[in-house]
Length: 165
Image 1: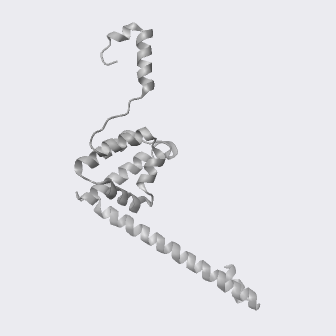
Image 2 (image 1 turned 90 degrees about the horizontal axis):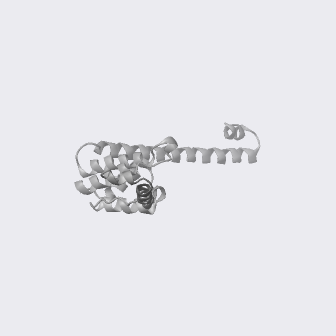
Image 3 (image 1 turned 180 degrees about the vertical axis):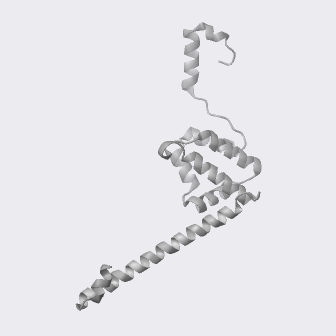
């Protein structure tokens, strides 16, 4: 509104400044509208593939599951590693490449999947994820849990008689 008022005044300098500011505002708004249109078009294109059984449709499904697993819990502060690993196993089983899932992830969420995985998972979890992508899921054992089991069996010998403890 201010650029229009400035452009309507009699002063030449103020009038030129109002026209420049108004032009920049129009260009900025046009750019924002274009980016929004492209984003919506990408989402619609990806969503049209969802559930059609094709590799691209499966990639969209896996991208959604991974996004939900990476941003779960209160305030999106936790990750559901088991869901991520099972999705990686399903990707391997169905022959859907990480590139296809990454492309779908980029179209849907405007983020890079590999960057998100590296940022939110620690190196051990990334190793498990990569193993699952290759079809040989092996959970990385926690040394803390094995130490606690051993020490509890020493402290309470009756636990030695419980199978699978």
